[in-house]
Length: 357
Image (cartoon, rainbow, N blue to C red):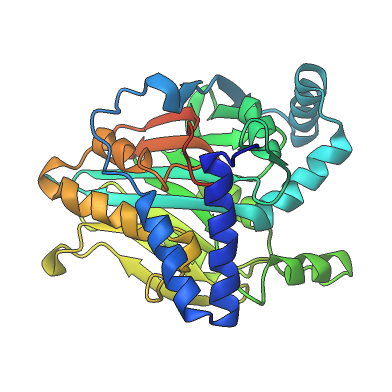
């Protein structure tokens, strides 16, 4: 008789939970909620510097010269991907579309007592794109991990901005403009979602901007935190999104909640109200997250347990290393500090038992 592995059991329970939420089976819903609660772990500590089974290594750095003509830079970039990673250009194009609508993430911006701003994120990707039952992993997630790169974008031999990206993705999901601002993006689930915008774009209505192209434009050209916030708030998009922005002075941190057309809310750090951090997963912060996908509650529990007095890049890494914030979809963790211009990124692994998302 073959027994279910614990990761398989978590996977099944999450799907039962989703079914119960959709069809209002209250008793079974509460039971599965209790089962999921049992898998939560205590907040991690001492995980930084990254080591052990949850860290597969540092992300490699590359440099891109923005002074090169765009056509030459693009050819060099795609040639590198094709030769070294064996990814055809057609697949690269598909990846760019999928990244627009399938990123599931956790982002945190926090301020310490001295006014230092810290920004961290987990990038989770590959949901429902092949489950490897033997290894208890998402197939696409594991294939993407070797494609994670750090890029230093320079002009006149000086850094303009830095990013952590998947090789072949021309937009930006995680980036920092040293001394000015840091930026991450999270998918926002909405009926009027990215599929609608992408279909409109395919059929010729192209007044909306690809999310990743906007973030790249902002990182390359915005001259301040406020400038970046304005561009991210006002530009029409192909897909709804959350933009998480960090700055270089007290109070400069926010979550911008976007529809494809406009901005619904800007949720900012506010020390007078005791709001020393903002934390975003994939649900509007004023609404409860889906119980079958609640990374917010354990992440906030760990942030509150950490306290503002002890917040740092290291303690944010601890939060992002706590299951289910760290899960089978997590490809990398990034840590940024605008005032120092630092960007650290690490390839992640979530040893069993671990939640599928």
